[in-house]
Image (cartoon, rainbow, N blue to C red; front, side):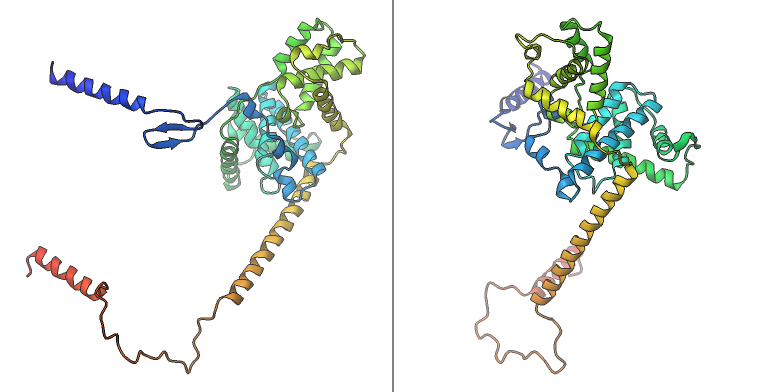
Length: 364
C-alpha cells in the first residue's frame, strides 16, 4: 500500500470518528465536548406565543391598546398602498404586512419608527417573494404617499445627503427586522387555501361569495390574526363570515369547518377582529405618530429623572476624596522587622529584566 493511500485512509478514519462523536442529547448538538444550541424553523414558529400577545412591548412603554391597534392598521395600509404603486403581487404585499405585525410584537412603536419599518418590510418582502424592487423606488413611493396628497405628483427625491441617510436607515432597519425575527420570514398565505376550500364546498362559481371572502382575507392582514391562528383557520373564518353576510347556507351536519380542522370559537374570534377594523375611528398616521412622540418624551423624562436620582445617591454614598489643606498622611513609626519572603519588589523585577536584556544584546 502506497503512502498516499495510507494517508487518505487515515483522514477518512478521522472524519468517521468525528462523525461518531456527533450526538443530540435533548436540545442542541454535542460535537466533541462542546454543546451547540440547535435552531428549529417550522411554520408553528410563525405564530406569536400567547404570553407575548397579552402584553406587547408598546403597551409596556405606555402606548394605549387602541393607538397600537390603529398604528398597526395604518402601517399595513401604507404597505398595501406602496405595493400597489410598486406593482408588487398581492402575495408580496401580504408578506410585508405580516412581517410588520410580527416585528412590533418584538419591539415597540415608541422606540422604532413605523414608517421606516414599513419601508424595510416592503423592500424585504419583495426579495422574499422573488419580486425585488430597488430601494430608491421604495423610498420615492413612500415619499409620494407622504407628500403627494390631493392628487399632486412630486418629483423623485434628489440624491443628496438626506436621501443617503434615509437609504442607510432603511437598510439598517431591514437588518433589525431580520435579526428580531431570527431570519424566520416564511409566511403561509391563505390565498390558495381559500380557493381550494371553496372548491371542496362546491361554491367556487358563486362569485359574490368568492369575492367577499377574498376581500375579508385581504382586510384581515391589517389585524394580527395571522400571528394568532393558522392560515387554514383564517381562510375558514373568511368563508364563514362571507356566508353569514350573504345568507348562504353551508353544510352543518357535520359542520363544514370541522372537515378543515377548525373550531367554531376560533372562527368567531377571527370574525370579531376583522369586523372591529370597520368600527375603529379613522385617525391619520401623523396624529398617531404624535401620540408616539409623547410616550417617547415621557419615557425619556422618566429615564433622565432616574439617572439624576442615581447620580445624587452615588455622590451621597461615596466618601469624598478631597483632602483638607492641613492634613498630611503620617508615615509609619517603624518598618516591619521581619521582611515578607513571598513579596517581590517591583524594582527588583525591573532590574532583572534590564540585566537579561544586556546579556542578550552582548553588552554585559
